[in-house]
Structure formats: C-alpha cells, structure tokens
Length: 380
Ligand code: PLP
Image 1 (spheres, rainbow, N blue to C red):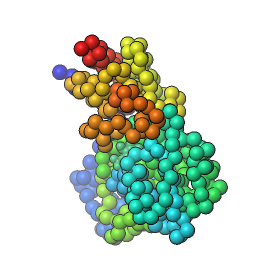
Image 2: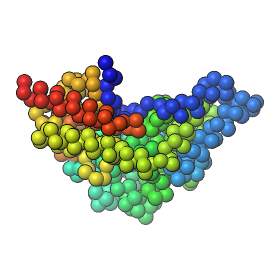
Image 3: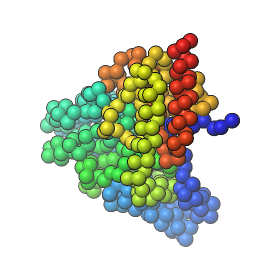
Image 4: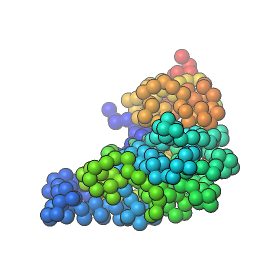
C-alpha cells in the first residue's frame, strides 16, 4: 500500500536531507558545549555562529539580532512578555488580531490577567485585519502590536508593512508571528518594518524543537527565563546545537530558491483546488484568494464534516481540519469563526497544505480520494 499523500506541511515539515546531513556531525563527533573553552566547545560555538548568520540572512537581519529558542511559541512568549516587562509603567495596552495562533493569544491573555489591557482587532471575511481597525485601536498607552504575518489555517497574509507605518510613527513596538511564512515567502524585516519576528524551524524543513526570535537592535526586551548567559541572557540554557545547525541549514537551503519554491507550491496548490472545485459543486475557499500563503488551501466541503471526510481518506491523505494544536477536538475553528464563517461551512472545512516534496501526481491522487469519499458521504 502507498503511504498517504502528506498535505499537512503547515502542521510540520519533514527534515530536509541536507538539513539532517548538516546536523549529524553535531550529534556525533562535534558534541561540545558552546560555552566550553576547549576545541570541542569552540567548534560548537562556531557552528551556532554560522547558523545565526544564515537565519539572519534569510530574514534580512543582522546576526546579533537573532535569539535561538526552542520553538516559535517560545519566541512569541519572549516577544510579548519580554517586551511588556521592559515597558515603562504608563504603557499597559496591547493589540493583537483575532486570528492569532495560541502562541501569541495565550501570552496576550496572560498579560491581561496581569493587569494589561488587550484589544483584539477583528478580521474581514477573508481573514485580513484592516489597517484602519489597527489604527483605531492604538492609544497613548499602547506598548505593543502583534499581528501574524500569515495565518496557519487559511494562509491569509496580513498587511504588516502598513501596520508598521502606524506603529513606527507612534513609537509602538510591532511583533509578527512569521512561523508560517518564513521559508515559504521571501521576507525582510526592514521591508516589513517589524521590531520582533518569530520563526519556527519545523515549518521549513528544520527539526522540531528549534525556533528563533528576531529582535531589532535597540528593542527593549527583558528575559522571561533566568539562568546562565546564553543568547545574551534572553534564552538561558545550553544551546540545542544540532537543532540550531539544522535551522541554519534550512535557512540556507530556502533562501536562494524562494521565488521558484513559491511558484511551485502555488502551482500544485492551485492544481489541487481546480481538481476539487471541478468535481465538488459548492466547494468554498476559506481565506484570501490572492493574499495568501502559496501552499495553503482551506476549503469547505458542502454537506459533510471535514473531520469525517479526513477520517474516511486517512489511509490515502494526511491533512488536518485546521490548526494541528486543536485537531483532536471537534470545536469550530476560532479563525473561521472570526472570519464570520457559519457553523455548517466551518464544519466542512479542511486545510490542505503542500510542500517542497509534493508532486503533481500526489495532488491528483489526493484530490481523487477526497472527491470519491465526499461523493460516498453525500450519497449515504
Ligand atoms: N504560530 C503559528 C502561526 C503556527 O502555525 C505555529 C505552529 O503551528 C506556531 C506559532 C507554534 O510553533 P511551534 O510549534 O514552533 O511552537
């Protein structure tokens, strides 16, 4: 039997062979602690430095602006809580979008419990915040705005550059969770205008357990973990050297081919969409038709539950109904609800996300299976 077609690259990606090759020596012979003064330690420290340069290059940042973390969740916690702690007492207001991942929403709520005021700006039917609604939310005591770069469930891209114009003018920090866009789209921190940006290794062919936070030089940020002096005291604890090397290798692998990767992902994603739309009357796209991650297709299948549909094709297609974090529970996605999508349409939603290794024949096979299962279910 063939392995299922993997269409869940937004949940996680496999480790690229080049990335694994780069990592292995740091699990075998070059196992030193980067803080050790001897040659093994220096070797590890040099590898971390190279990885830092590679991640910085991918983001258009300086290497001293990269803090390695254990994941994007940790990066966003450091961004929100660390920036909040560094603020003067008069700045106690925070703005986030309604479609943030829990990695941002949960620390924002944590701050609210600690006395911060939180404004959640709405999104439109395509999942985009309006720049005007962010402008309207800003106040004299606003310290930080956090709006994700690309949504994990529907792929919609947010107008970060335009939001940055607002926040910069008023001296407000801007964080973006770019866990889904780094490695899929060419992006540069200066063009985006952000002060803080979160990266997830396992969304672009590095292993799980490594991420990064970009911290623009001069951004006020305090530690949220306390220990030794690694990562400029912002992420104390012995570095995950092999994971960091893997993140650097993934950045180096992604960077030169990003425009071609984007076009290839889009072509396979759109082929999948065409095939499904041709065979399923009433199939509805969730998310922005154009301003969207090139690999993400979130569609509502009419008259069925997306979860039941994926269950029916589980031997042939591996995909999710939404965020991997909630895929076990039968709750309506908060992202789709924020977009004003009703319960029936939301229940039929499936997130299909393609990746580097997805071939045309894979999307054809997956589409055939989904169409056949949908037909069986609506006929029953
Ligand atoms: N932010 C977004 C948009 C995501 O899609 C994810 C992963 O699903 C995360 C944050 C969390 O990433 P990590 O698993 O590295 O903590």
